[in-house]
Each structure stands twice: as C-alpha cells, then as structure tokens.
Image (cartoon, rainbow, N blue to C red; front, top):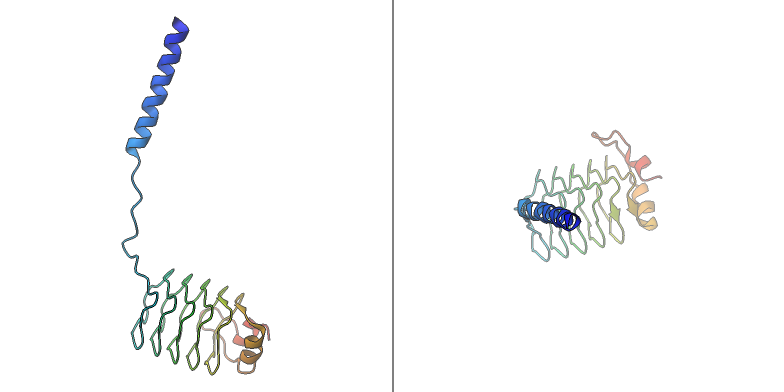
Length: 166
C-alpha cells in the first residue's frame, strides 16, 4: 500500500510540474514587421539607409530604386529587375541575389560578402570599391567584372579586383 501511495504521489508531483510548465509558457508572437515586397512595383522608391535585413523582394520591379547605404543582409532578391538602381554602399552580406537584372546599376562601395548572385546580370554595373569576398557568381560574370574591377572598399579595406579573385 505504501508503495502504491508513493507512486501516486510521484505521479501527482510530475503531473503538477508538467501543468506548471505548460501554463507558464509564453506563446510565440509573430514579428511586428513582417512586410515582404514580393511581386511589388517598387520603381523609383527610396529605401536609402533602411534596415531591410532578411526581407524578401521576389519578382519585384525595382527600376531606379534607391537602396543607397541600406542593409540588405540575408535578404532575398530573386527574379527582380533593378535596372539603373542606386546600390551605393549597400550591404548584401549573405543575400540571395539570384536571377536579378542589375543592368546599369551602381554598386560603388557595396559589400556582397558571402552573397549568392547566380544567373544575375552585371552588365554596365559600376563596381568601384565593391567587395565580393566569398560571393558566389557565375564564371562569365566574374570574367566580365574583372575587366572593370577597381577601387578598394572603404569599410572592409578589400580591393574589388582581389575580392573577385581576378
């Protein structure tokens, strides 16, 4: 009988402990800022110096957008059009820039550390002082970028030429 009472007491204590844990747990709350820019027309918008870390810009129309000095670390910019965009001093560390049309954009002093920029067009893009260290780019694009690689990134101190592995 004592053993039965002892087992019942242990089960009761364990049950109450589990109930206490369940009742004291706080529910997960969604982030207040959950905006994404998928399929949006953002042409001529000003996002200069904005904190856009982790944001998504999938299939967004971003002609002549201003991202100067913005932080787009770990952002997703895929299937986007950034024709003649201002990306001066932008941070794209760890960003996915896949299948993006950057023709005529300005990446002066941009930081693309460990970014993935595959199937992306860098035609007529200004890259003076851009740091591509660890970035994954198509071989053809690297060859084209090396032809006009110049300058040193003022933040990282790495030359564009060296960061591309030219």
